Length: 113
Image (cartoon, rainbow, N blue to C red; front, side):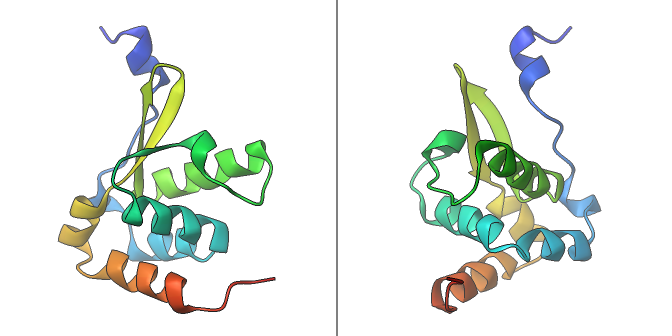
């Protein structure tokens, strides 16, 4: 039997079963790319509320869900904080170099106004 804590943790797909198309569609949005870039650059996992996103909380929740369903992030709880971790090692096995390419492009491309 799972604990109440386990019930709060959303399902995470096996990265090996995610089509590249779904991952790329998740990364089309600049807010989602910024989340992936921040997680890639971070020394530790980041709680949802610590991201400085230019969207409402409900829209931010939607962006995190899209990233999770695309296999890009793993979410878990520490107390009442929902934490986010980039699934970089898993992604690199299935799509070598993809995370580096996306993060490099996100850092160097002009940001929308």
